Length: 118
Length: 236
Image 1 (tube, rainbow over the protein chains, first blue to last red):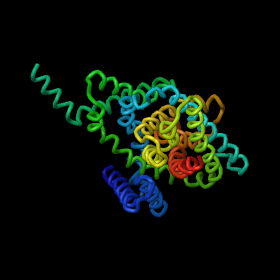
Image 2 (image 1 turned 60 degrees about the vertical axis):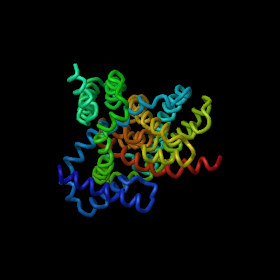
Image 3 (image 1 turned 180 degrees about the vertical axis):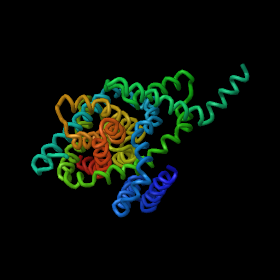
Image 4 (image 1 turned 45 degrees about the vertical axis):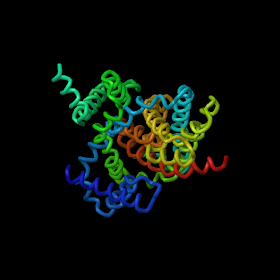
């Protein structure tokens, strides 16, 4: 677990250094994600070291959003009198975006023969 | 009495109490959402309400709570890097669904930006508040950067991003079930686009394939929103 954590942090550190050093618009951890992905394709055996730790982290991903989520309660006054309009806009657009994404995915999957998933 | 006050001021200053509260609230929320199948029983939503209530009752400012809970918040970075694992495990499926994902990405991303700005505008929202809602489906660091760039309010965008994630996680399963979609790849991918990390966290709880595809949707939408939102607003 410590080895896997060290590897994750090292990739994040590398990504952060690249992102800030070169002034890239992509967040550092996303660059770390891409770099780890490339490393896994070159050295698939690294999976065994990582699996248990990343399964635990991703299985409890919700926990990691809690501290930022509590901030929403603290900052609800930034909504001002636009509160109901903003909540309506968020709800409608998020539902619409989910449906638009699923419908587009399914339509193109049917056309390209990627329909069946094994 | 004096001792109790001294103890409280010590506990309120140190991370220990706030870290413990965060983990215990999450475990309680996780147990509730595991038992109740109700969509509103979302672990992020329940945890936030529990902790928010404690802060309200004790009068502790959010900044002090966050100082303690930031160790949990910090793990979002390593968690993002971790997404490389399900991505790599699903490589074969990803290759086969390249075109469906590309179509879903553009459809979902444009709908998220367009419908949010459109509905808010129709309901009378104007100015920098309107600009702040445009990037709300992208993951927080990207959305905040975009808001700054197009003239929105970054602090408002941060709140809108989190709310979008919670709303997406709450409505995704009932909405997709009601419409009869059974393809976990499509379901996960769309939720990742529309509701970033909180949607992805929900997808991982429902189905591992959905989780992997949600992670990709989130990552791709972050990049597309960073390009699309400033481009769309430069047209007006």
